[in-house]
Image 1: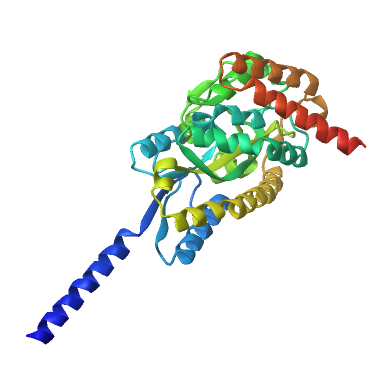
Image 2 (image 1 turned 45 degrees about the vertical axis):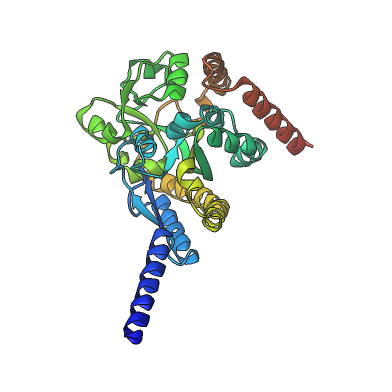
Length: 339
């Protein structure tokens, strides 16, 4: 009887330990528009494996790639409802959380990645705080590549876009202000419907990056591309504050500390592969007549971008204070480079 009681007690203890271990496991359900096999998903998959390994399986990531969880506003809605806990977002999604960060996507603001990096480093604490104040923990900053115009037909000048069916991401107030400043009337669609829109003629022009155009299969529909990029698309890897706060302290440290190397890899890989994609597209796409670098009317476009920024500041979408800090940081960097 004593032996049976001892065995029963051992069994209860083992079950208790197993239950405690099971209760100490966490699954991060993570969505992204990035297709499986893309540059971004390769980095995310490696990140997920690293988290699982370093946590001894206590923290795992279940990915929902390729937009299977919907457009970025759909992803954020599912995070609010607890159906997802994290996501990789482009500028549109970033603008749904902390709109002032989109100043970094202002068309024709930066001349190089070095300028972008220097200015972003200056305002990164404000961006981190902005995400946290809006119920998200920013784990990693990322990019989606250099943004170009892609079209089914050649464009002699940007003025022709007023007569084109140019795609605008549905609900994207930032790009809407830029298009409005130029006098363009875009066609608003979720990103998940752009390929169909290009196939049917609903839209004939898009703004995208070489890497994304290939990954999303838009490139086959748009044989014309502007030589010069207009901006660098931003992005962010986020988790909900609720999920983050619910992790044990050691897993919080692990998750947060994984962000910096993930950010470095995402940015480096995206810049490398975006350039490689540009070389691929150069063999299959043709320049838009009149939109080569020397004819882009940079001074005019910069002025129109400033007009759009001012309009967004007036509507409190962008922060005038943060924007002036960006201007000052950019001026300091250019001055230091000139010296």
